[in-house]
Structures are given as C-alpha cells and as structure tokens.
Amino acid sequence: MKLRATLAFLGRLLVVLAAAELLPIVCCLWYGETRAAVAFLVTALITAGAGWAAILGGRKAGVVYRREGILIVVGGWLLASLSGALPYVLTGTAGPIDALFESVSGLTATGASILTSIEGTGYGVLFWRSFSQWLGGMGIIVLFVALLPELGAGARFIYKLEVPGPTAETLHPRVRDTAAAMWRIYALLTLAQVVLLLAAGLNLFDALTHTFSTLSTGGFSPRNASVAAFDSPAVELIVILFMVLAGANFSLYYRLGRLGRESQIWRDPELRIYLAVVAGFTGWITWHLVATGTYAERGISRAALDALFQVSSILTTTGFATANYDQWPVLAKGLMVVLMFIGGSAGSTAGGLKIIRMVVGIKAALREVRLIFSPSAVIAVFVGGKAVPESVVRSVMGIFILYFSLWGLGTLLLTVGLGDTAPYGLHTSATASIVTLGNIGPGLEGVGPAGNFAFFSGWQKLVMVMLMLAGRLEVYAIAALFTLAFWRK
Image (cartoon, rainbow, N blue to C red):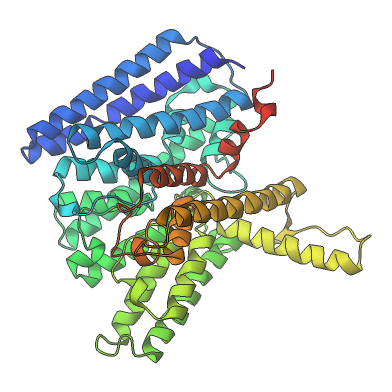
C-alpha cells in the first residue's frame, strides 16, 4: 500500500480546504467580527500548514489503487471534519466534541445541530456552518478530483466512493472532467437560487446561507425557526423547488443541457418514481392533516404547502422545517419516518438509501419469492427496461444489511445512553440514529424540528459522528477499514 503517496494526496486536499476556509473571513469583516476573522485565519493557517507538512512527508505517485482510494476518501473526510471543527472551538461557540459533531454534521450535509441559540451565534460561524454543507454536499473529494489531475486511473474509483448511489455515472471519458461538470451544475443552481431568494425579499446573508444548505440538502439555517422564520410562501416554494432539484440525479441536468431533449429526462425511471413519491406522500399527508382537523384554523392550502415542504425536506434529507411535524397525527409522523429511510436519487446531494436502491432491493426480493417455486429459473432484475448487473444487486442487498444493522446498533447505543430517567425515549434514539446515518437532520421527540442534539452525552455524539460519516460514505468505504483483508499486503 502506498501510504506516503496517500499522505501526499491528503496534504493537497487540506491545502484546498484551507483556501475555502478563508471565505468566511469576508463575512466576519463585513459584520465587524474581528475575533471570528482571526479564528478563521488561524484555522486556515493550521490546515494549510498540516497540508504542506503532509505533502513534504509524502511522496508523489502516478497512480493510486483501491486501497489508497479508500484511505484518501475516508482520511479526507476525517481530516476535513477535524479542520472544520476548529472555528467553533476558536470562537468559543462549542467545546471540542460538540465542535466535531457540528463540523461533521455540516460537511456530511446532515443538519443535526448542538446549537441551542442559533441566532445568538456570530455571522461568520453561521456562514461557515452553511458553507461547509455546500462544500460537503457535492463532495469535497469530488472537488479534489476535479482540481487534481495527478490521481490518474485511481480517480475513477475515488469518484465512485464519493458520489452517492449504487453506480457512479461518468459524464466524460475522463473522471476529472465529470467531476468538474458536476460542480459547474452545482454552482449554476446555487446562483439561480440566490437570485430568486433575493428577489423574494431575503437579504444577501440569508439568501446565501439558505441556498448553501438547500443545494447541499443539508438544512442548516441561521434562524432558530428555520425557513418558517420568513413567513413567506414565496420563499418556501423557492426552497421546495431547489430541494427537489438537489435530490434528483445531477447527470440528468447535464444531459438536458447537452442534448436539450426533455423526453429523455422524463423517461428516467428513478426520476419518475422520485417525483411520484413526493406527490403521493404530499397528497396522503395533506388529506390526513385536513381529515383530522389539524389544520382547521390554517386551511387546506397551508396544510398542502406544509406537507409538500416537509415531504421534500425529509425525502431529500435536507432537514429544513416550516412546521413541527412532531406535533402532527401519528399516521403523518409515521409517513415522515418512512421517508427518512428512502432518501433522494443516486448522483444527487441527498442522503438515505436512495430511490434506485429501494427499487432494486424490492425487485430482488420479489425475484427470490419467485425462485421458491421456480428454483431453476434464471430471472434478471429489470429497472426501466434494462437488466441490472448481478454485481449491483449484490451491492444493494449488502448495503441494506449493513445500513439497517448500523441503524439498529446506533439505536441501541443511544437508548442505553438515555437511561430510564431521561425525558426522551425510544422514538428519540431510533430517529436520532436514522437521521444521522441517513444525513437527514431532524427526527422525532427530543431531536424533532423544534429540538436539537445538545442533550446527548459526549460519547453518544461521537457515535452519531461515526453514523454521519458512514452514511455519507455509504457504509462500504468505512466498513472496509475494519477488515483484515484491507490491511494485508
């Protein structure tokens, strides 16, 4: 294994991250936060210094392979998380463990927070909090691949580990060009949402921070009441639109821009199912809220808008809120929990298991039912009229097992930690586990839209840090590090 070459690549990643950490200084100086500006400058210098030390201590290698690729991806996320935690510590916003939790939650675009008074936090920290989600949403490693041509053939494997989904579609023969194209689309969508939010009446700070958290499907807001603070249907509709766009496969936008054939986009089976889930769950929840009289005073239109917003937010794993769905009737809350397990599309910034995996998993399970009475039959799994390779089917079934096992283990650990005298129970621990693993943000009860994660103990927060990283890297990359075969020569 080329450990020194891996170290050099990680050093280059830290240098890129250090450059990004300079941007919040502009925000700090604009709002007169000199101490915070110094904190970000120190953070950038420490990160850059560590990066250059790693570069000097490592050595250049023309090609990286699978083992090195896994170490680069996992190591890159760990180092970025530690670096991203420094501003919270240096500004006095949080202690080391809380800072790490907030940093990992930001970079993995989870949106779970330990801050109890968000609006009491400085502008610079809040800007970094949302900007870190924007960096992590498309993927700091994808940005790294786009900027670093030396990765060679190993770039394809690194890209596959970083881009969510059972397969990582490449838009160009060279993976570096694919990564650059994805970031261009991401930047254009970001610009479009900022312009629309400014037109809807938001100031530049709110427009930027909410855009960063929307396109990354992260959900951090500089407002205690999240998007509900603006009390504006126009703002909510804009955020809904871009949450749904961010939860779709970004390669579809590339095809649309290159070919200009909308029909090819609408023939994509995952997109059709994704939009059907949004529409179906919105209709079902709206009907239930109206039927139970939950929105008797606010009206059907408000019920429909809140249902659409929360369905879009949870399905895409964004985590913004315009209503406290923890106060909704049991069926509506149950449907929200179902959405937490589904997630957005492959090749999007959304977390969760992904729509396409759910489809492949269900069809593979039905195939096993047929094989009970036709054991000699050769039955392929088809999605959108195309046979799914058996390697992909095996990968999907494997990640289902690991994903639900991690959720169960996380639930158990968080439940044990809460104890019998804690104010919250199983609903809190179970949803805290799935929303951190799925990179969603809010859950139910203590971690609902009106709550936060501050009451958990330090070791529980570290458990959730591991869940967030495992969910963002889709389990396999981190699981590989715990196998003996990975470390054998």
